[in-house]
Length: 464
Image (cartoon, rainbow, N blue to C red; front, side):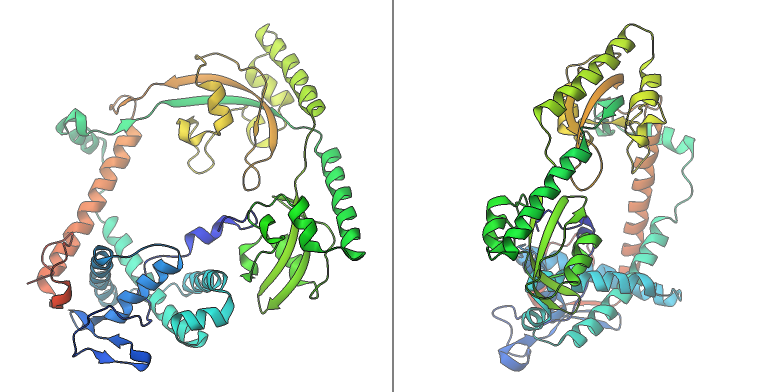
């Protein structure tokens, strides 16, 4: 979904899980069991005491198609092997008396249903797509997610089972691995910044005045959709007159969904602020926790005068630094308006890893465009960039100090121990998973239906 309102949390919901739905493969054997509407189902694999049904496999294909992905026979083979592997872990998890994380299952189930509702047009669309009522889908998906919870726990247990990697282990890996097979470390940059913002208060006030004017025009009889096409800055909905489609409230910023859900059909909201900007909303339809609405999004805009003023200020700061009357770090503590970096003297760090080194793909395009031709110790001229707030960042103006460059190179023990340690840990975890699968294959009864015996599986031993 490209609409700028959607939060990124949607991306983590879907996983390849066995869901039960019916969609027949063509040319199935005549002995396949028949269901209503000409749909068919059959067992395509037996592993231990469990069967994997064609309907389970095809349910995964349905989910892929719902997300716009294609699935050929090779993909079906991959899905089947993943199901077989999952069953090995599931059986062992039950033997080990592992317990389901019910809270996590409910959270993922809610997310999966929300995305299905959003993609397929609400409960009715989901029921038509999967050929069964919501209550039954919820029951089946919850059962599948509970099974997946146990599988993931067992996989985590197996992958973390190897003994703790020691410095000697890392050294052994480094010394025994051909140089061309060692990890390649891309060019890394260590940066400090001084960031200032334009006059956001004045720009926000101008946006609010514009939206109040548009709201008044709607209340006086003009069509909301027409004004949205003319003025909205949301690329995902502007061509549709601001209409978003019937979606779960959970896919929007809370302030947006709360305002929309509080409206009556046809009613227009007051101004709503989200990290994307400012909105007015008109409710079209509400179904439970889902709604369809139109909106007009306008973002604060800054003038050439705002830019000149910020550049002049940064120029003055740069002059003080280059005359050696103030270090860049001290200047950042004193003048930078970014609270996350000013306390550390402007030192930029990855919020996910805490690392103060970045490769070019981790930097904002405007930042990299400035530093790529700089040398260690250089201070940039003032330039326009973005901060790390909201979805895509807000306009900001910066000075960058290039403190350190580590050129691209093959990993070495002296400079890249942590990267080598991660590589060894990952290698051992992968080997532990492989060993578990191969061991369980040998002691578990497995039967693959002829229609899948031509698959090129990653692990030998499925077809006997």
